[in-house]
Length: 403
Image 1 (cartoon, rainbow, N blue to C red):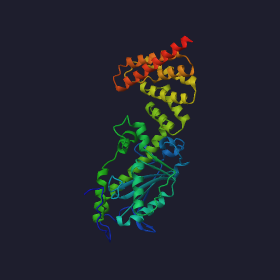
Image 2 (spheres, rainbow, N blue to C red):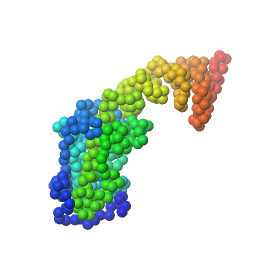
Image 3 (cartoon, rainbow, N blue to C red):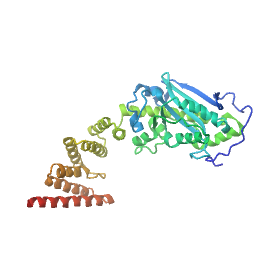
Image 4 (spheres, helix red, strand yellow):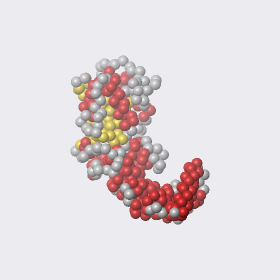
């Protein structure tokens, strides 16, 4: 069976088999029929991995734009809705159905998990109606890879049923993107499972794999036994709780404890979000205690570009000088572009009108490139550009000497 295209069994009638009388879902009446809903409350001190679920509530939402890339954010965490779906396939095409929507939100100092299950594809309109009523109660969404998968697929299912999709959120925080910014170079992957293991302290025992999910739903449709779906529902709950604690962990990093590598990543995220004061503070923190030459050069480069763009020349010159001093005092075990030399040369040529100093920095840039013994194509391009700059300066100086 190809899971991307759903070959549906005929609609069943009568009592579900197996543990149907014990399963936690209750009927949910809607104007378009009946679907199933389950709610479960987790107290704020409930620990998921090594993070209490309510820890996010001890922080304000001021750092949330770093995770969203900017834009509007909720004033209170209670206005944020976490979403995760389970589907009959991994494509967002016509034959893929959403059969379980898990939602999580903060209430009474803890987290309520609310899940909607489509008991039969013939009941999809009722299912989407119930889900839509809850989605419509929130203005801000959070997910893990929801921008690329969950939300587009849900939107498509509403369209297929000629229903208006209640997905016009003021903001959507997709946690996958900041996770990649923070840890892509440190972790084997930024999948939710990898983040659970390496960052959240979550160990799943006997969890159903994502590849099994469609088949379990098909078995449920075939014989009505909820035992097929119980592990899927539990899997969905764990995904939601991990999303909540992942958001808490990221906000904690943004406001308090973090490594220099994470501080550098947060600075870049803040810059993209347009929060330049916060970005500059992060970069300054890295410069005060860099964990490596690479992190120092990267943070200094980011900060100096902002100083240059804002014409804060004295600070920019000091920082370029510091970069050059650090580069010349190291063994250069990694490839570092000659950008601070070039920036100094540009400044002296175009602003200070000092071609002699500009030529000196250009020659030092060329020495830097040679010293690294760089053989990449970029090295030859950089050397060609530096030679062109040197020749232009020499011509300019020669012309000036004639006047």
